[in-house]
Image (cartoon, rainbow, N blue to C red; front, side, top):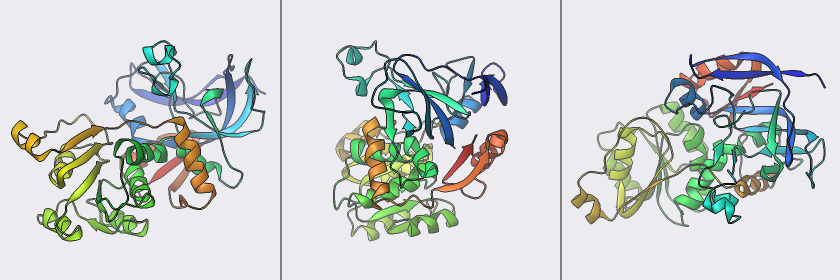
Length: 347
């Protein structure tokens, strides 16, 4: 193994990034070195670049949706072998907070996020905690496995854990890009009916229908609430997911909820939104729930669903770009060029 590798490095002081030669990292105790096969480009990666998310390190390798094979085991690692196909978790417990001290690592209060608090996987190799690995079934491709670690697992957590969508509940999804597309698919999978997609792009709306939405509406339509009422038999929405994170989408989604309905905020931005007057909000009994991330076990669940043909991600990979061309992939996502669901980086 050579002593150096190629990796994209984000420099916080200048908010610039470049693919550079850096030393191949060594796995510490309880860690493994993963040879990266693919890594997704996510809007949160863009948020670090544009300053929406504050930098935690002066220089960091980005990329947190990875798949690959174990290249080297750190001291004390058992149950894994070199060559195993794996997905690393995109977060590490801090081991110091109250929950971690009690052994509840899954609910760490100060979770450290990959590509923000430590180096990520827009690189030839990345280091991961062995306890956060998920084995990739043999019949699941590295491409589809990579996006399980956020682009699919975050929607899964939003639908199943935060939103607690039940069979027969009405669901709306605002913004049907990388995250929203998978919310649509997963809401349908758990039995929501109808599932309604909202987007300003007609091509994206058509795709949402093809991937499982029962209806797809232009969120700029002046008669939108009437159309939602008609689609739901007057019921309106039990659960609304804002995958865009904008003031307009947040407030519109909240307005389309039934009495006691739940709004799950998944998309993130620097925009501020309002829930209206306290009287109106209280009388409506609506709930607004923030959502972030997933539990490691969710990746295993999703891998099993893909492996058994229950969840189809065949259209989720929009393009693959070489690591040396990562800037092109970032620009395409930022400009919505080709309406990508997920663009992958190939080291």
